Length: 578
Image 1 (cartoon, rainbow, N blue to C red):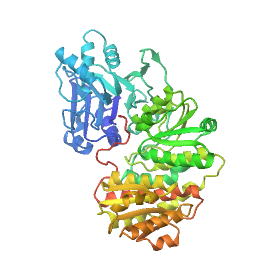
Image 2: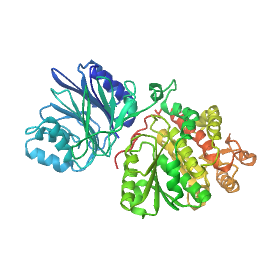
Image 3: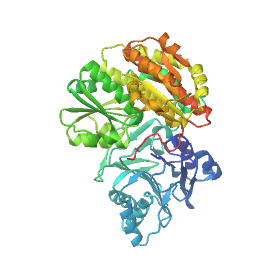
Image 4: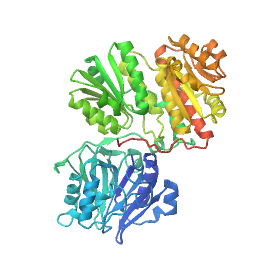
């Protein structure tokens, strides 16, 4: 989940690394650090805290040198503190590295190294890698010692290392993203493309088990058997502005507004290969986490009702415990990053059962794509805000292309744009409910997954309790929680569920709820304390109309509560550890 960047070339490395870390802070922000090598040795600057605070107080860009690496951390082993911040070094201080992932056998390795006299400075699993390299370097070259150290590791890792006195950077990748950036007389690496966009648009996503050596003259990539291999480069058309806020106060608000543009790109996604697979299977298991799981719930309903498939949607971390795929099963995996650890494990489980796999992801060359038989890219561009917004609607757009390949879907971006124009109304609503401690979201049919996504957005960035229920479940327990003034947000489009959700609205209103509705129905509006008008649409399109107000509501409640919506506490953008 952490952010990694490395550089070797003629530029001032500390400036490249510092700028890259600014783009990566959304991957982790409990501590940050850099290491830069020059003729005097390798200087490490790191501490607990947010990037701006630490980089300013430690004056990152004052460090001279043309080779270095940096890291923004989201803690997995060891509490956030200076000692546990990356980069880490060996006993000599000459071997320095950063790591993303989890080393499952670190305890045994650490114990063996301590018995050989190694002294550790942190509680992290990552530091053991530096000491392993140090141990092997006593008898072999730097490259071979790095390769051998990596071979001892069990778990997940993206590793970037440098050795004092050498103008090379060593890389390794397994179950955690690491991308090489190709420049002229310089090389880059990072866990995400936006960290390098200022300097290059040509990248090589490292594949599972790959190792690499970077120098200012180029790169060499090796497979897990240490054989030199070639990997395909990609060129992205993202410009640096796409990874910046574009004048908005937060990335999240920018990305909500971006949806009206990027949906056109998502609707141009190539689904031909995926359609062939889908048409050949009647049994479909959908696996995903978080926001992607809510998109999966919508896909499940559409496949069942419109294509007569036997479809089910699984939380990825539960899949191996609750599902039994076989060679007749089609898996559709949904992951914005393509690196979600729980989804990856679910796919590996399904692969062993000989199931076929389609993946929907936003990141070209990500891990999920190499486990898949077919891949559909979301084409949503980089999403910086931790709370997914445009990638959710992009997932829906791609899903609709799969389910309705002959349908003209060009109205979708226009629907989204019309709902973004209601921003002023949503800001007013946010001000009314910003101090309430509990908020309930209700929906039925296609509206329920949207309600669930609205509740997730609300809780993750406002820090207020929010729950979503299918309307019919109210009387099976949650109704006891409804009392005077409790906000209940009901999704009431004019579809087959309208009469039922109307009854649920009456139930909560009778118990004093502050009723908020998304509807075009006048009877529903009369039962509401606050109503957001949505257009009358063909039934399948309502999710696109309803999710926008819910995203905006979460954003403005967070804003009114003085919370940074781009960096919710305890969360990171890509969950690359189980």
